[in-house]
Length: 279
Image (cartoon, rainbow, N blue to C red; front, side, top):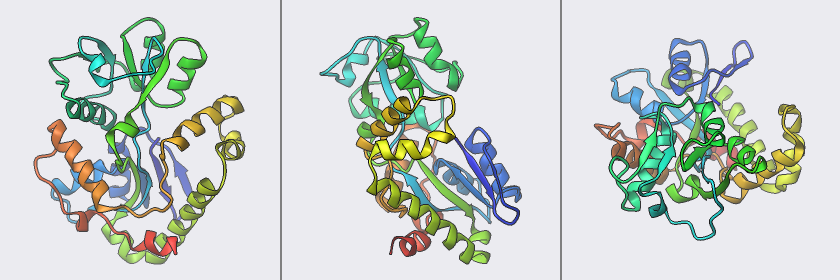
């Protein structure tokens, strides 16, 4: 989910897609955007002068999972050779992470398997349940829903196998950060309190707190989902966006053919606010 914040006139909205979120931030419709940090790389390379800078990283793992029809306790990525997998949109971060993992395991995404990329993001789980594909790449709650319905089994975490990828981050225009440093600091401090809560409470406790936000999902399901993300170290214990993670992000973008020129970490990342919030 991509989130926009308008702090001057408090408002929260959730458009779908980093491109829409980025457009809203650049246009001034939103002060802060929450999205995949790859969007800031693309924008920078387009030559924008008042580009978007990431100031607080929230997640450090990809949040999707490989779901199979049969349970497997000794899964190896080479098992996907010759199979059909329901994947993501070409150029989208979920698909790029998936293909990066395949290549790291000596698998050619174009030659060694068939990746279906023409199914809408929210429709892959129903398509898999109806019998399409041998495997599917699913975020939550899709992965857990397939398991609960007896239609699939989570056998691998893309988050664990891709490494510490800066999957989501909060960002704002360079000019906004300069002119509203105090506001950004207060905002980051509040985010850090949330991270502190996550680190000091169990998945069950976290699930009980967020349950009202998901009225159509049972507490047991929410607990299962939170536990899965918790155990794979999805959330950072601080919001500091480290260079090693940014380098890995650009490795993934390069591997997918979506990045022609690497961009400077120092231009697109500021750790000032996160470092103060962590103190």
